[in-house]
Length: 287
Image (cartoon, rainbow, N blue to C red; front, side):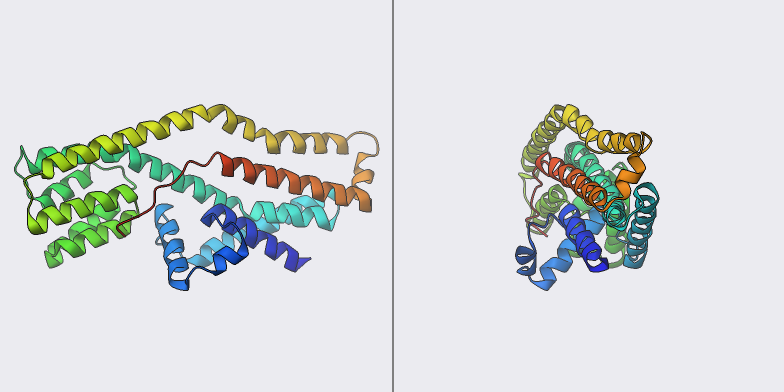
């Protein structure tokens, strides 16, 4: 039973966090690429300084709380295991949502930041590194630590290539990669067309951001309805326990099996609904 619970936690965790499709596909990725994918996910979720042990402790603690809740409500081991697996994925789901929010804020901010970069490097006459650090001060709070780390690297080394690498690693964002590479080429080899390139990049980012906003707005009703996948069945189960001999029915072997199956279907529907509503993510080309 414990092995099944552990396997279930692993499968749901990797599916929610890293988009795993099956164990074979994941095993074919080189170890270095898997580590890089995990590190990027942690950076995008704002967890680059959090020890893995704390995340594991949160997962284990919530899993235990789910097991206790299932045992108290349904009086059996099987529903407790299912609820433990589901509760253990709550931290992953929370940080996955936080990662999506951070990425959405960054996507909305980049068109403005690129336009400011254009103004600073042309009309204001700033150098490219100076303009880059100035726009970082007006970036969303979640992005500022990466700009501050890049500025420290520039002050220590005056090596713009290393500075850009620090910024890209701290942001882990496709738009940041493209913008930084454009600025790096302009800084190293020069380019009178930097203004036109930044203008085209800002227009492209603006169109992409608007398209994603429209898609999220169109999904608002479906996202609201998705919550009923959990609320309604659990409400009906709790109501059934208080009617007649409902609690005794749950305690029978068949009742325990049906409760476990029902909880599993709820979890599967929740994960499936989130998967089909997921917007396509941009690939990082210039890591």
